[in-house]
Length: 162
Length: 162
Image (cartoon, rainbow over all chains, first blue to last red; front, side):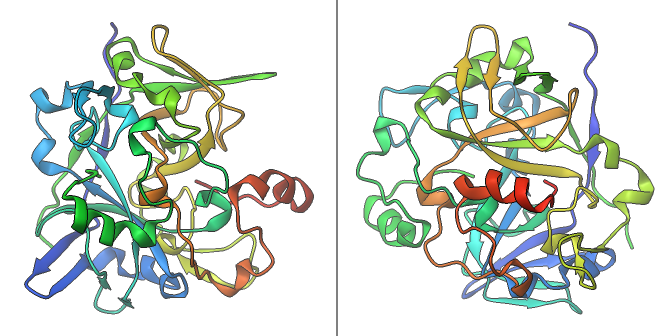
């Protein structure tokens, strides 16, 4: 193999999670980038799964699925944080956007305080909302809408990763 | 400002686009990561907007929207390739997955031959399919489903970016 290209990325902000409060704090230079985000109900958050940023976990290509015992899937076929580039993606409802102070308040994200945030994108139906979807058998019986995720995960104690 | 953290990412593959053919070629070490991806109808492709990877364009925080004249939006409120971390996201129908040869055949992606691909994730309704979505006014009249995007974009000559 020839030498691989590498690219540099840097956090645009960080997850701030405390008891009863959850938000993303955007670093000062990037706060103008939040302008008009409040016009959207949902945001797609790209975050850096920093605890998986090590050579061993970045070399993982397949994994046993916690929600489908016995199935070994490629990391491109699941949402494991262990992947060659540990960029996780979570789509979430927006509670509030404070452009001046760089605060995006969310109900929750499936990651912890201090997680670096790489990018925010508005959720736009023409790009992301798919009418006819087929998924792997092991998702049979799972909800078909993100709004039903919270109740399902609470009942079933499973986690999708990012 | 204190010094920013930086993270390293590398392509897991490249877009290969030619007349009448469109696919992602996954580099050899990452091919096992495609295992079971064929069980999903749609994939979310994270790609590197390499032409926007320069200090000038990465410093852009707001942009005039090509599809909403007169509106200046933050880059976190649109899908412009000009953003601090030029990671683009495109959700697309999967035509074929060849794990052994590392080929993911797609109808199309809104980028060109040679574009570095950073990650693939399966599209899973519980994570991405939102029943009740609100978008900015300038999307009034746009289709509410990704399946209707092709016809709409062909008629209206607009582009969302990544």
